[in-house]
Image (tube, rainbow, N blue to C red; front, side, top):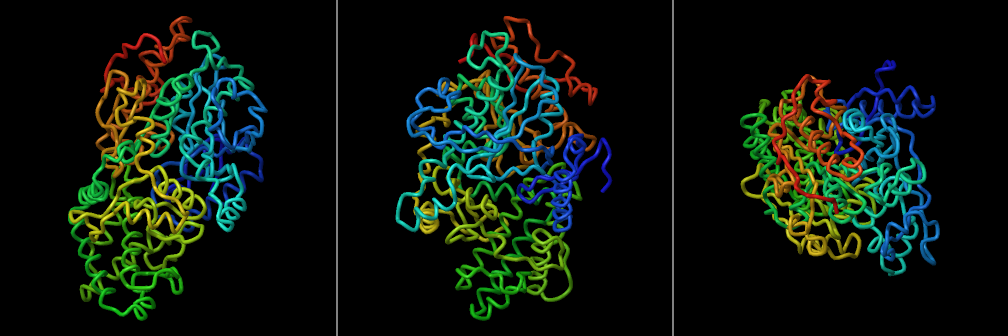
Amino acid sequence: FQISNQKSISSLITHHSYQLSQSRTMLMMSTAFRDNILRGCLLVFALQPHLNCCWAGIPTEPEFFPLQLVDHSNISNISTSTFSSSVSKGSNFWKQRYYSNTDHFKGPGYPILLILGGEGAISPATGIFYPVVVNVYAREFGALVLQPEHRFYGESQPVSYHSIDQARKNGRVDPRVQLFTTEQALYDAVRLTKFLARNRYGCNVDDRFSKEYCPVISIGGSYPGFMSAMARLRFPDHVDIGYAASAPMKFYAQQVPQFDYYDHITAVAEEAVSGCAKAVQQTLFDVVDYFSQTPWDTAGSKAGAVGVCPGTVPSYVGDAQTFIDELVMVVGFTFANHNMAYYPPSKEASLTQSCFTFTSSPSGLRSVSSLTKLSSFLGLSLAGSAQSCWDMTKQLPSGPNATVSSGDWSGVGTGTSGESWDWQTCTLLVESIGFGPDSMFPNRNWSLNWLNRHCQARFRVTPEPTQLVEKWKFDSLVEAGASRILFTNGLRDGWSVSGITKNMSESILALNFPNGAHHSDLNGHGPRSDDTPDIRDGYGEIQEILGRWLEELPSYRLYNKHAGGSKTAVDDDNNNSVRSRASATNKEDLPK
């Protein structure tokens, strides 16, 4: 790998997707820090060189906020609590990891782009994980970029693993019940942003009529997209605009039929390669038949027929049906990962290549052929080579009683981040996702009873699927008083079945990208030559909407500030005119 002032290597380990990317940041890093990034990236590409990318970050030195509150639930006024180092008697603090970028920040009076961290650790090698926010939107708006890591992920731990383990061993309530919620994470983000804006960057954070007021635009994709919309809804006095990409709003409102997700993934796979869905379905039928007819004491040792490395079938798997369920779950969430990364759509995309694995028929008996196909698919996807075995235990999250089938049937991930996402989907972020008869996967119904059993065994908690929507009313955003929220959706993304895909008012807008996958509008460094026209135009449309909403704020109107004229940063890069498909006017007089 050669490094010049225009190239660096960055990686983001999210849904198993990686890519080389460009950045000037590498040159400004210490040699040791840069070398650590390179070592990590070399390992990534050695293990999984075939996988195409969802996105790549801007490697950045981490910072830590030492005055983050462990528990925000007793704070009645965030404006007064934000700057106090002794908020209330007995308050405890912890150090939250975050990242910042000031490359384009013009100082007090200009926006703060708040990228919300979500269900994964954010390593320094990842840094700012949406470079387009820095390269396009921060540049155009003269904005500061802040990105906090979500509590209980990575190095952002409000309480120690030891205290969690001790609570379990001593029969006490897990401290995460109170502390590990989306609401606590949103309070973290608002507190950190307001503290830094005022104390480090000189912004006025309370008076929207002040020339030094720094408006906040929350930004997120996937679960952080949901968080971004909720930041605007729940904290309208502190967050001025929300940009929510691929936000699973309807899953958390319990409005999505359980089979829609994998039915959509099946349809997109068939669109990518004609015959893919039938080929996958037939392969899995044969594999299920093979293991169903084999006594388990023999089948366990024969797991290598589908590429499982010797000795890596998890110990809890004690019968053929459990093995089949877990094997199909791995296949399902591996296809889900490839679906999320299916942008730009091409023959080289991992989804397309996976379909080719099933539609290309090797010689031999059908059952043998099916075993070979599945082994090749899983070896390529999980171990980097069609000829490699894959470790089934490495598909488990950490923690007691971990199973492959977990709280999120699109996959919770592995390690401690996987455990944390399993916790969240076992408590308040319940997603009804099953395998239906019309998908390419064997039928397996999801049920709340199944989830209850899993979550009790795993964490001794009971899922509460409707608590958030009943409290926050995000199933009726207009009636809840929401405004200035932009939803975007890639329509090839499985998560689009849960998205807000229609304008709900003149200031709750939706942009849909027919060629887009999982928050494709946030992935990468900005417009590029292989972008599809809808995504390329989308950058300009998003910028126009955000800029228009900024100019509606009192601090912009009173001081004749402009958030971008008719010729935008995106226009400069693409020589395109900007034409918004969304509603044209927000009649709101003054912001909430």
